[in-house]
Length: 490
Ligand code: ADP
Image 1 (cartoon, protein in one colour):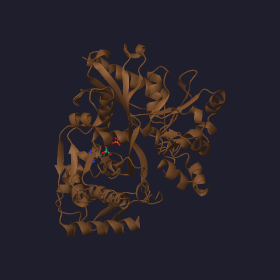
Image 2 (cartoon, helix red, strand yellow):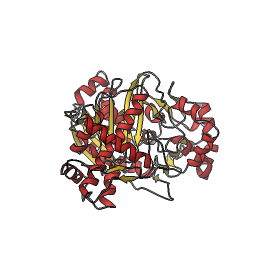
Image 3 (tube, helix red, strand yellow):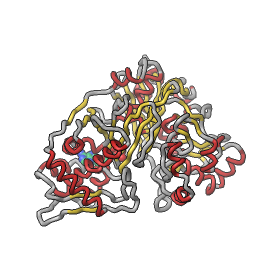
Image 4 (tube, helix red, strand yellow):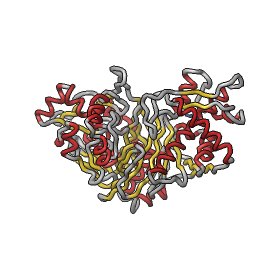
């Protein structure tokens, strides 16, 4: 019986294949690390050939665990967003290394466009800001700096795509050059209103329109694998960028529903419904879902430093041996004794957007020790999330509950502190791989195992743990006051 869903989960540091039952139960997986290339300060590259090879190896491994391709009903792909692959359609091979989302090399071009006064128009059309994070300026950089890319553009054989687009091209043996609307909405080249690449945005960023993929739905009969790869053609019925996948995996399918992922950084997305998202607080507007041509949007805010602060306590200060020890340290004392950390180690993201800010530890006394620092580090997560909640509220979106996931969400103390400081219940699923689960839901609905995404989510989402707000108001106010003072110093 073919009722397994194969999810290809293309992360920044690894590629994975995961097998889910049609009921959402995780069955098996295979994983391979990806090589990170850092050719210069601020540059981050991947080898797109390696991404494809490792994806294929992981997929074959998991398909054999499932008992063969006949057991796979459909494939869903979720991926690191914004990363750009350039390949030649005459050979099907990459022309240069992929430029990864974290790469900052296009800052001068972004600054040039900001100085030329282009940001307001770009934000209104795309929901994004002029930042090297997004794909469009990375494509332009390749055209300007990699002779093979320029030559392919002139020969009419250049194809650009984000990681899901590259993988679909390889999985279909070159038959399809497509990108789903959630990934396409991160390029700066797609208008949010019609979810199509725009000729004039392409002209602004200097990217030839014809090198871009066709923008598609995120669920449905999107493509089919070439029969030679797995022994039969398997339908690809879900395509989705990682943060949108986690939002869907957390079943945030109704307006106002919000998820926060606490990994290296923290990413918060709120379902905005069908109205075009706008922000006066430098939050991003993005496509959350597109199914049967109808779109749901999200507002997104990201914090640069979350779990990486705990990593810093572990690796640079040696305060803990493993990240989870922060929980017992935080619980061992009744308060941080006034110690406050502003984790601006690589600047501040939303809603402050101060690349020049640097970290602060305030309120130190002779009574401050490891426990106070660990507790202050965890408290900083609630403080940063609180500032995002205020920005979302100022843009008209109040959170009623917060659904959390990511490696750091395993910390019960932090989850309770989030509920306390935000004043809303916090929910955490027992199965925390919400990104892969979201792609599985889209693929399951897309192949017709469920009537629609809501039915897939209702059946496939597992059990939850809930944290209710308990903190007294005086403590909350005191916490926010010392956070604001420390933030001003940062
Ligand atoms: P990413 O997907 O960004 O690589 P993960 O979702 O795997 O990150 O989360 C890993 C991060 O979470 C690490 O930075 C680690 O320091 C932090 N982390 C993991 N477990 C805990 C914990 N129990 N308490 C606090 N931080 C944790």
